[in-house]
Image 1 (cartoon, one colour):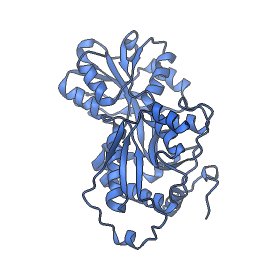
Image 2 (image 1 turned 45 degrees about the vertical axis):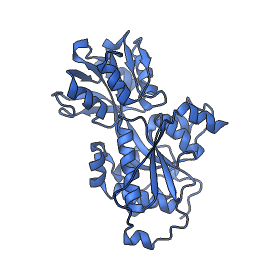
Image 3 (image 1 turned 60 degrees about the vertical axis):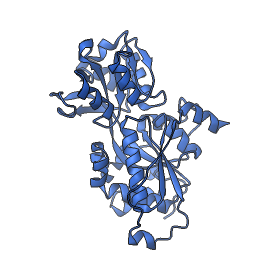
Image 4 (image 1 turned 90 degrees about the vertical axis):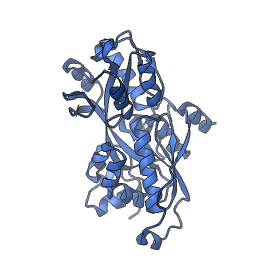
Length: 338
């Protein structure tokens, strides 16, 4: 019953199976004892048109290519859903933003209040997720304050953007008519005049924002100084972030906003040796990850410290130790063995 509840509210729209161009295993992988490896893995991403979808499908494909394990990327409602689905075992791995992940970890998830999601383990750091908005230039909207009384799509209902934009608007005293949906759909709605703005959070550049900017005169904006003070003072899970000028065509100045870190996660029962090899695949091949999405420039082992609460998977700990990083004792899981 609980699984059905999660699957319903996560709005798992389907699976996108990644077909790898190469399935040949490297000699080292062929020589490994793979007896406890899974035959296939499912990776939770988010809606089509967002960075999670592109990034997740890409690294699932890289895992399939380099490790020879069938990997599929699942379209889900985003981090809130992924946390719950990995915890329940419906997904083997997933992608989460650390704010929603923390709420799930301590039993405050909006999907399953009271359920502490301690079957989830941290793996590799992904990238920061900056919050920003886009509106057509002819709307005159170029500041978050202009969204008062307007209709705004904030992404899938269980995504990081929807969870936190609604809180940001409330904190700033804005009355916004919230709409929910995938990034690709939101881009179409904005261009068709069905919504006034699309406020989202994803690795940059967000492909849906780039699409809107390429086809229309549009304003892309973050927060002004006063709004930044309010948001940073009210939400300790976010930090200040600058979206560099030129990230989006036609945006000549830096965009000041806030961001939240993202992490890959895995179910605790997934083979430690397999997870270790996933870590090597993703973190030792940053050039390949960068080809998938530019946000992967921050997919680096040294950013492991962006996780301060979730137990790391034993396979991830093995990788970090080999690289010379010291994992704090409170982040070792109960099942860890030297």
